[in-house]
Image (cartoon, rainbow, N blue to C red; front, top):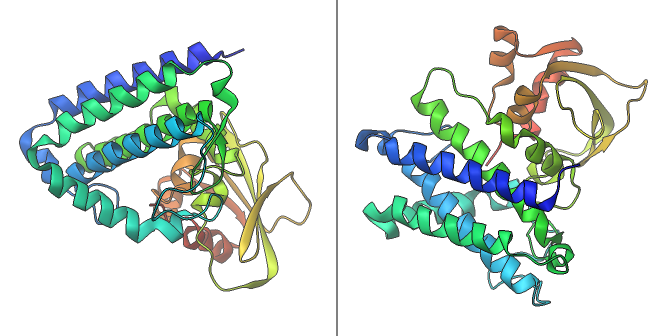
Length: 283
């Protein structure tokens, strides 16, 4: 069974690996458009700086018993990728402009500070609830959340600079844990972009090669969604590997391109399958 120490070691190893990668990027790479809409590579790194800083603040306050929303933040449970997309994009660009040529140095410092805080959580503090816009979560869950942020945004950078970019296999279990949580930023519910109210529910069944989600069906109903056990009412079945599932859920992979390349196979209503991309656009 994976222990708290194991998870801390993984976070430290992934952080060190990504830090080394960022330090090897040539100067012209930082101005390249990333796979994140509106963001250059330097904006993605500035975003990771900001995330590390707010995570450290949320955890530090949470273990002291304060899990109220900071000024300017939505109450816990009210946030989503859709609600925060424009604010997040603007905040990251503003952070990059503020940091100027010190983005990488700021990243090193913020990443180290967060890792030290998480590694030093006592057994009692690990379960204490901490604020997130997506909902209150135990302090120790910020390890999975940070791994998810690092892995997905590393892919955003690499996808813009390399012909074959992959999500870090070491971080996949943490990402799948975060997707399956019902109350965390990065969860499936958090990643959902609601649209017109559906009078008829749509059920997507996923067959995932490798580590799969906790429940294989995604049901879009009304203007909400839920994860569910497999049912006979499935209208679309989608088969893919774990990395493809992650990239689809976080809006990083175009469905038609995934179908054309063979990364994704579908059975059932093709139009409904393509509609999946409307509800999961990333941030």
